[in-house]
Image (cartoon, rainbow, N blue to C red; front, side, top):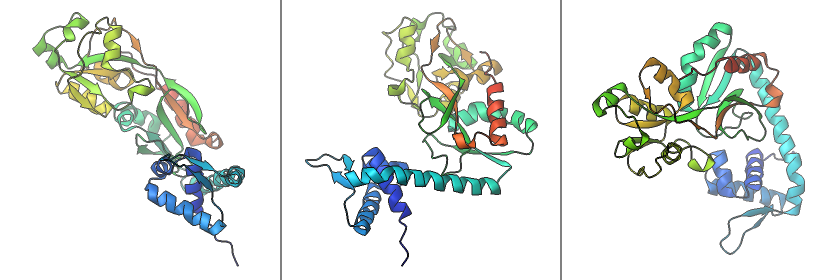
Length: 305
């Protein structure tokens, strides 16, 4: 009699053990917490032994049993081997396709305006873009390479810094003509401010309050104004004349150079704590198409603004 293989249940168990939570595992696996719990219980029923010490007294934290802890390294190694095998099969069927993961805003404001330069260098490679704000599993989702924004810590991936950036206010020439020249940051009081909510402030993303503090005007009220959860849309709102946006230089420089936006108070410099990083799996580093794209990204320096 063949031994049944509960791959989905094993994946649910491994993710639950890593996060110590059914809810966090469900978020990673894009299913409901109830589905993760049922998969784990199915595996426990088949094995005839519990895999977790469930929290009591309202606590939701899961703690793997001693037997589960001993088994986890082998299970994770098995998933790594499966992913590697699947990736090799996938690569064999799409030698000319490079799958790249980036945020929607980075794709719109930086990558897509430059991608023809890569096509000119590597006409035999087709780029497939995966635009998402959530972190993806490179192996299981067939991702070759990506650009991520943060502090540079993504376990399991090779990380190489691509670009630093500055934070500064911008507005459209039309808005500036209607509202008059701004000579001092204190003149921002009462003006329509546009806030970028695309990255949480708790990971170091600069806010209007941070910039105003650097500019010597911390007393200005920043509670009001338009709030947008996409950096490209923030800049478009400013281009359309809806107010002053707090821009990220990598996203905004093309618009500033083209005259669609005006950089305000250029003497005030606020360097972002976050940066852009190239990320990929170590086992994919030798792929010629990946190496070509990585080198091209590094050559495409930001436009001074």
